[in-house]
Amino acid sequence: MVTWACNDMAFTVTTSRPFRARCSITLIVFLLLFPSFAVEAPAGTFEEEVSAPLTPSFSVGAKIRYLFKSYTSYEFGDPYFPYQEQLSRLEFPLDTWWAGLDMRLRFRRFSVGLEALTSVKQNAHGEAEDSDWESGPDDKTTYSTSQMRVAPSYMVRFDADLEVSDWLGLPGWLKIRPLGGIRYQRFNLVNHDGIQYDLTGASGNTLLPGEGIRFKQTYWHYFVGLRSTIDLSRPTGIPSLTLNLQADWAYVEGMNEDNHLQRAGRRFTYEDTYGEAWHFSMGLKKELGKGFSMGLDGDYLTLSTTGNHRLLNRTFGMDMSFSNGVRVWSDQLSLSLTLEYRF
Image 1 (spheres, helix red, strand yellow):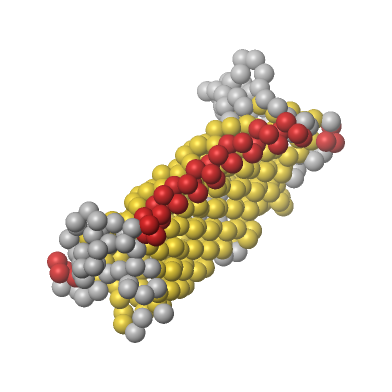
Image 2 (tube, one colour; image 1 turned 120 degrees about the vertical axis):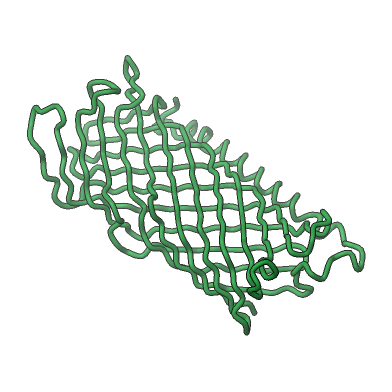
């Protein structure tokens, strides 16, 4: 493993895979959208029932989102013999409120969208947990819990999709769109006012007042998938009601920075990891008239990555990197409500 002390070599290792990923997703999006410019459907082949605007339209929506039963975690193993793979694990709750905008520009054959959300400053529901297995993988020795404050954090998504329903000969009430895009997540989390338990019984519990950990985490998702819209007006008798479905797979890059504020010196740990994510969503949308619509969506996202861990404490001249047992993962469930206006 090349350490960060060797700046030139580290730069080579950490940028080669992200560079290939960015090139790949750019190529995929290009291939999805190229037919819209290169091929024109013959006149009259596009069914009138398929709701593709003949002229470009733009919509903007105010969105609120609540994450529940959601968390992000990381763990690492022992770099020394016998190379125990479960040495320390940290788990951070993500049950929080978010708010922002969801915008989309629609053309006859394709559309592009941008969603940008920021966290609402608050304590997350639930407690952050820190566990250590210093005597073996089946013998947890230390466990601590703490409150967790969500500092300003962000979620951004850009995507492009392509209308292919008429090319596939699908009925007018069903639309299928391949899509590709980039999803960015930045979590800034602060653990505070905790308590540590010595599970060996050697000492009592220890109160940890004030801030204990400042944790910064970034995920980049480069995704491809399918999006579908089903017109529910006929079976339900409710006009302008649609069911929206989406499933996508992503190549993921993850980056962590953990500052243990109550440890001696200036102790930081870093993780650079790579892996994959799956995302599924389902929602209902109702046109309200005069350009307005209301949407309710449920999302589930799960990701898992592995990679390298770096421990840095310059006060004591400590700087080491290893990959044994390094894993970063997250599960995110959410409900979103959007009030949209189409111009």
